[in-house]
Image 1: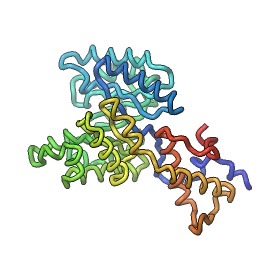
Image 2: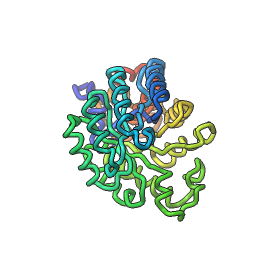
Image 3: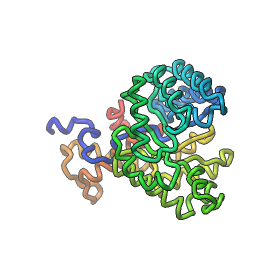
Image 4: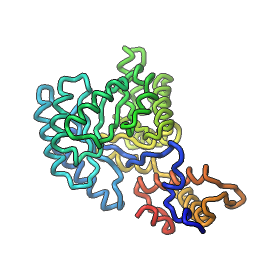
Length: 330
């Protein structure tokens, strides 16, 4: 066995764009002070439970701030960021770049708490020009290291989504379902905003697929939209499963704590597949990552890459990976 056999699979197998960004599979949003504090507490509790951070907390300035109270809300969020434990995965959603409060959000949040942010979420991104404006605001406030996550909410933005996904600072792209439907001036019915209808209307389906495809083309993470029927756990589970298994989404928004565990379960790979992935990758490592035969099937780096991503997803959803591969996640 040569030295390369002992290299980490992430080094050996990441020779394409696919999977270059690995994030927790759930992104939990809250904007009211009590709920923001509860979200941070829940994140800490579930990190201890699963042994890894299974969801990001995004503190919301766009929908969380009352009209006229944007500055005070930004200061509140900045204080919560400073109180968060070092290493916690906490982000903030700022106002859109054309909103009067955008610059104020960036000047307050990034300048005061850049070292506590894992990323900045920017809503209503329409083009790469919007990203350039955000970059300048980051640089002005000492946030040069911060990645961006963006929200696509209009048909024009969907048209430009491959260019947006190609931007090196963009880490993940989310789909804004309700604004997307509203942007069509009544041409798409309200039923397309429901947990079932959003997977049936052709224009909405097309937008979801374009976003997922753009992300996978550029090694970014596609993040699925909210399910507004937050008390309907059957709808939540069904939507998360369809997003993951039919539309290629590897991350999803939560707007209520009860939605987090169903998202984790839906995004998690099958336990039998996890066992198979561990067996094949251990055999590949023993063969110096050359092709192998397993149960009569040929495997090479293409399938190794698939099984490595599967193990990463298992770990990201809090599943216990087989003992023989835990060293890769230490």
